[in-house]
Length: 246
Picture 1: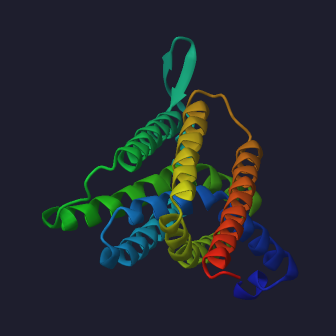
Picture 2 (picture 1 turned 180 degrees about the horizontal axis):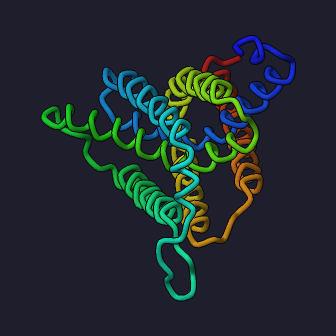
């Protein structure tokens, strides 16, 4: 019955699951900000919206096909004594992609590679949207399985995903703008991609790195960089006062 959904227990489950989806989506927001930041300014917002709306559809399909998702954990081969499943292959490939992507972005930033030409703008937008959607599937595998373990109602799981994607839509634009304004923050975001890529590869090799460790490293790095930015802002104000003879 529909009325069975509107209970305190269901609202608590929705809140808990939504919080989990948002926390697990932090790495996704960082990736979206970096990918969209490489596009011309007039295409960035469109890439974020199309990519995230496509990701929303993919997540709902993953939830609906959860029996298939759980089946991905079944071994399909044994390599050097290690049982390999489709989930392991997907996580390993996603981790390698993030390592390659992060390394390429660092190279472009440090070496000052030329921006995309106008002729490649359409393909750049399509590639950015495709990357956002594909990586969202990789990021979503564990969170979808976790959601099914926490809640029995499909409607609650879909509602939590919709709210989480809405949060990403809201957070990705200011985060992208902040990263673009501060080159050191951009480099920090690239290093996060490398960190997440290593974690995905480790998961694919059955060596699980607790996400709490990763989030602590990310939070600590953000704290240190925030202090650096605050110190730089104070130095700039002092220099401006000296120039004005105050």
